[in-house]
Length: 162
Image: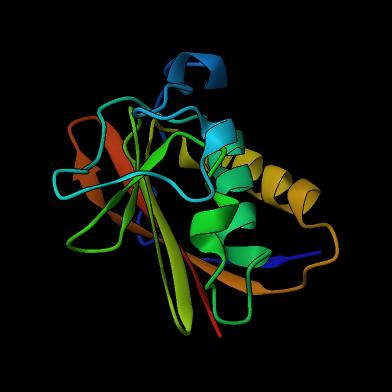
């Protein structure tokens, strides 16, 4: 079982839960069908979307790109090929095509940044449960920290460092 080191600097994140779109509402792909790709498409304009990705879906993406591709995280792009991501060709960051979520995998570190609606604790639980289900034998220490607010959303950073 993974041990997530939860580092939340403030309890001001406790607010009413807002409805979040389902995975099928977010599962749009840029261009080529996923079945025909070995890695996500690239674009110098790739950037974050505006929708909230369900935390359980984000946990699965984190497991696929980070937990299951260590050491080195070189296989992160291949792991995300069937998911709705586009890689920014200038920064190498993978951005969800419609959601406010990104993944950056470099030698030694893999991180996921996402927007969540309060209460943060529910999002953390859903993320962790999904990551554990996707990588049940992994025992990595994953740090989590808030990265500010975007309107009424809280930005979270999940990081796995080797």
